[in-house]
Image 1: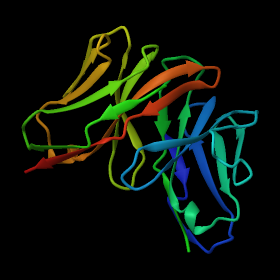
Image 2: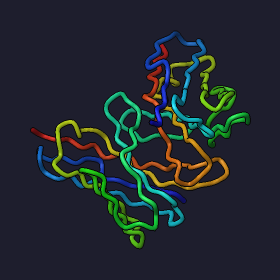
Image 3: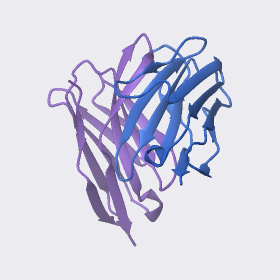
Length: 117
Length: 113
């Protein structure tokens, strides 16, 4: 149980393109979804937290107009990287948590490798 | 502030036990987690322990928690080449947004045949 599907797994596109990444919880309802960014050989950096039906909470230093997050349902959140540039190239990972209780762990998708040319 | 630290690298021989250590700073953490990341993949939840427990065992995995010293360890018995990966410990803080995680930098485990 607790499967999180993230698509696409890899994107290569030209500078200036907007890219949408989807994160779906397949067998549970995700009250909260998280978006992380991971640089090579580094740990995960939390970008934003989203709760279904409300605006995402962004971490300090993350541009909300650059990284648009939509959490329209209990099973789907999307991250759109608008007008992507080479410095946005990274590994983006989503996670989902099934409830607002302390013992609800985060379950992670397989990540999206974004390469901007 | 929150800070979770791990050693960067561990190398063991197949069949030996591996022990990955982690220290954290926030004594109000409710749960502590171990995740595994294979190359190019997301994070796989391995196990977690509630902060009022000392030990948790799940098949080949044993988690030890020393709350006084804020020290967490993951022991993998009979380590296999398939266990080669990066292992992240994480402490959780529960707030209105849910279960927020702070990750350590990850320990790269290399298992030699």
